[in-house]
Image 1 (cartoon, protein in one colour):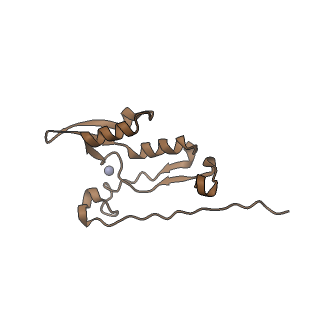
Image 2: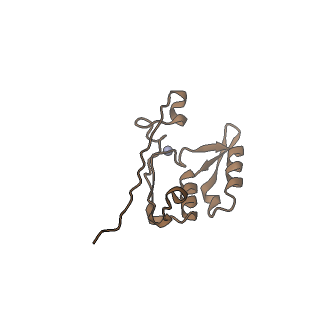
Image 3: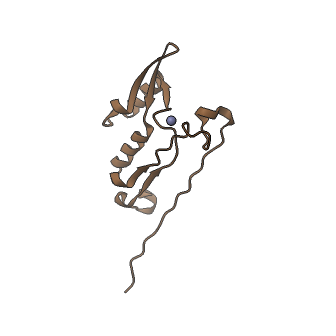
Length: 124
Ligand SMILES: [Zn+2]
């Protein structure tokens, strides 16, 4: 939007629709390390990726991808009050929403609709 339509970051509204949240985004050590490496310079990375404990003899971690994306939006210049999370976890609500984590190969796909509103200067 910034590059193609010359949108000003301060004018962009961002809504994170339903997606897997930290409560259910449990990963193994390798994925956690990959995320930590990718976002090593991100503030609060130690709160974003947290160690959960041992599950069936494997180290498990939880990752807050919402916070990662919020931080990326802030780095691009979006205003914090223009970034809103629906706070709907697709796994917690897999009775109404699709979730690969919850439904595996039987899961459908979620869709999103986005819009771009052009504002014109008022004439006269
Ligand atoms: Zn959840």
